[in-house]
Image 1 (cartoon, rainbow, N blue to C red):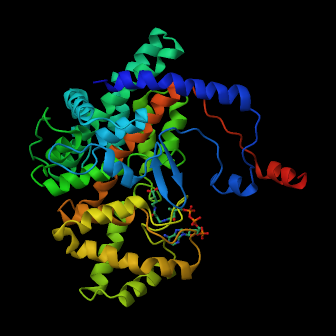
Image 2 (cartoon, rainbow, N blue to C red):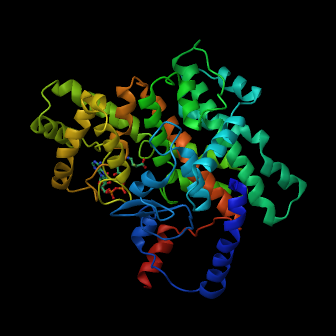
Image 3 (tube, rainbow, N blue to C red):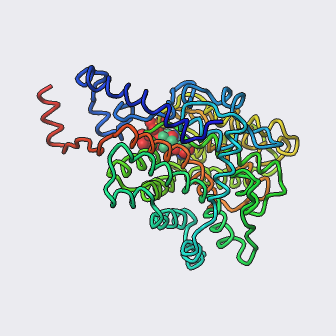
Length: 438
Ligand code: FCX
């Protein structure tokens, strides 16, 4: 059985060759225009960066190396005894473009468990932080502090050749991925369950089996399976989203993976990005409180209009790229439909009913380009149902997940020798001149 490193070693030369050819033969080929709307509109739609692991289609959603979410659900190995995709198999796919065997997935799980313990100074750092510090701030701080361990930084200081960058980057990425569950679980314990014992990492468990266990939910197999699926599906959403783009930008300065990913986490912590899942739940619970048990389409419609008329966005709806219901939302909904306890859960039912009404209301409202749900419309509600009710923690779970894509691309950026990112900015006066001369 080939290891992850051996598999990567095999696939990298062909990709390097592909890039070399694109560079030498097509450097000056025009593949798009830059419009004023791109410059003043957050670069929406501007094709301006390379990202290998996944591509987002506005209508059909994300594909990971060409595989849709239903494809991944068919072919990617699950945990022993489980059914859902696990982050290890997704990580393998994102990194190598290949579907791992069950044995390769188990080997990766074992390696991550082996490397999952936190250094003492990181435990001390986390334990010294005030309970009131937002869990995402804590996660970002701890990930940054782990760069004391960076193999890449140490190798760079020794003076290695460019061709070796990716191997040290990979080592950092695997070590960071391995430690994220223990980091995230310690933050949860410190903030919400002080005094609760933190179990040691079980070397026989997969990454999320251990995470769930350390959070104190190890006996809830349904929640553990949900976390596996949730974390695998949130792993990557092409390169332009704020967290992925941040990791890529910071990584392009040859900052090590710990610093690059901590920067990404702070982008994820914004309410228009990763924080949205906590906002959705807050909003759905406020709706539940207002309309009580009489969950009718009319009541939900009224509540949606109330939100919109007060100038707020409907959280969990809309997207910078997608123009259809998010397939990640659909996959999480299907998870709920397959489990009677979830299907009948009041909060899950409310999410479903909202989905039946919200797209029409948002179309009538006429502002958003995408009136359909994104993944955040449902993700937090399942956690809530199972008793993981601390909203402020939800983005941390997303943060454990998004590492899959961000770290993968850091390995590829170094393997392909991608340069420092440095787009050109213009002032409004310069833009006006460009417009006048066009
Ligand atoms: N409710 C009400 N109005 C909305 C809306 C929504 N859900 N989504 C977009 N709009 C409004 C925008 O505020 C904007 O109004 P403006 O012209 O007055 O500024 C207008 O519609 C056009 O926005 P649009 O181009 O469709 O959307 P953007 O690409 O600018 O923004 C996000 C995309 C996702 C930020 C936006 O749809 C939003 O705020 N949604 C709610 C928050 C959310 O769910 N975020 C999670 C996104 C994602 F899944 C993730 O990154 O995690």
